Length: 251
Length: 94
Image (cartoon, rainbow over all chains, first blue to last red; front, side):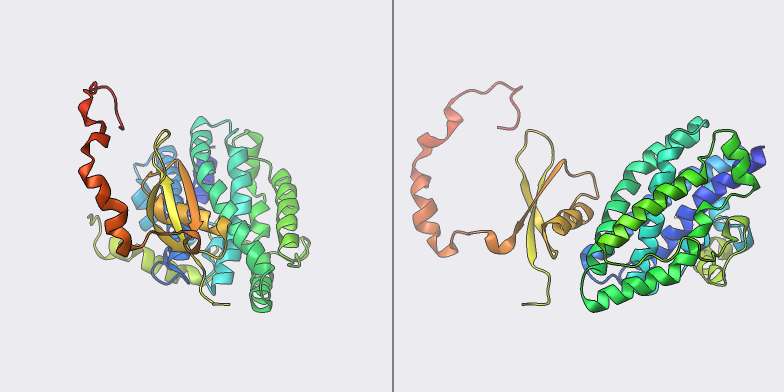
């Protein structure tokens, strides 16, 4: 049972950790100073959330592993993030669409987790929810503006949506870990989340004049069980370099 | 029309009871994004409880050349300062 909760906490932590790493890749390269800082702020919020989830995961595991050891000393097959967050940044349209699809799900999930039977999970969700409320406000606003913007921005957003759509199914996938925790009241029913997400994303995409792909489309999966895309090794090579080359190094 | 986003001046209220204070400027396509950008650029260190943004072109400024007629006449009118009243220690922000 504790193993299931450990797995679930790794999923929450690794989503935030890996997306934060992706957003950090934009620092210094954003299309405008204001966008650059907004992405960096989001990345910092997410790294803060990753720390809380992973620290609690280490505690639940009970082997004395710290948040840093979990973040920097696990290899790709040991990470439990969904595939969506490890997708490469691509153009700004790709990054924004990835962010929007994730944020819309993330806020619904955190909202539900504030009612978790596990008090620590509920407390972390409560803190993260305020940050993610702003993430979603910003990414939904930009997706709407750019989707309903120029012919080129519309095309780029639609292409990004079509490319990323197959990675959204995993957000709502239920495996044994999810089933156990949902039965305990620790995690939320993913069926409810999916309905709410589809309705909300549908409204935003309609306002953005974008065409939502079919919810019945074939979906990628595997990230939550540690089967990642080939991008993952490169991401970890950069993120973990320091601790791998200089174990225990601090500054 | 210029391709650059217009410039906005940003004013932050640091706590309730204090006036908004000019903190800098930024670029944004419209007011809503200017508020969002101001939040991201100027309130990273817990600086504020309120934000105003104003299009920089909407601000009317006095001319530096008018400094003498505008401001020098008050130099010799020391009786306008409320410094002749003893103020209790507890009164802040005056």
